[in-house]
Length: 286
Image 1 (cartoon, rainbow, N blue to C red):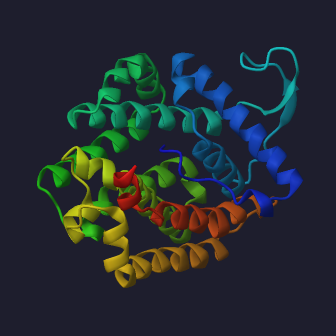
Image 2 (cartoon, rainbow, N blue to C red):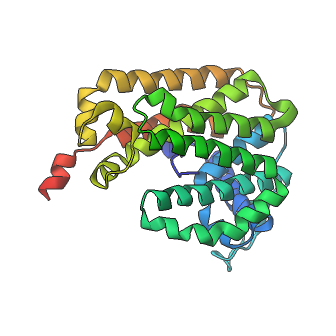
């Protein structure tokens, strides 16, 4: 994942913050078990959110125990136990990290060299969950093809990543997958792609790399693109948020949904507002 999905912490209950941190530590251990120790370096808090969401939709209660870890060797911390779902999500995280770095390499980004660091983890992920890894590879190849063509249609450019998340949700949720869960994960995938495009806008323009928002709006600075296209950008994100709220309301949860509600209904809009803020003219003046 890309590290954009976070809670609105001031509005997070203490119990949910503890759960969130335990899920994060649990995902770290699950990645190590499923894909090897190196693959743990790619973990983001996005996967703690995905763990909470998928476990809850599947009616699976996570078991939390205190345990040591390599980063905190002296004091035990609450850690969510490893299970089939968390190992699957760890495999997905590893495959996403590897193929994202491959994309960075193709774009001429120096970070792409680190893809070799995750190659062994990818092979282990593909052995455990070949269908999930196949979905990621196929959809990201579609994404790359659109980018090579210089696609300037925002909805079209988002489609492969949105479909990837939708298909992965079907694979992960199995019999618990519904039209509403598929639509929610589709929206999350679309938002992640747009968040990444917003975050990298100025850097992509400077380095002459593809960015659908630049191709669509043609502004050299993100601040200008946002200022001159406020109505269209607001419509895109407000439509996404409305669809997320509608689908989330129609998904059945067995356990407490406060954590996932906070992240989807508050954290994602908050992150969007943060990403929309930029004044590259100030940067240029420094």
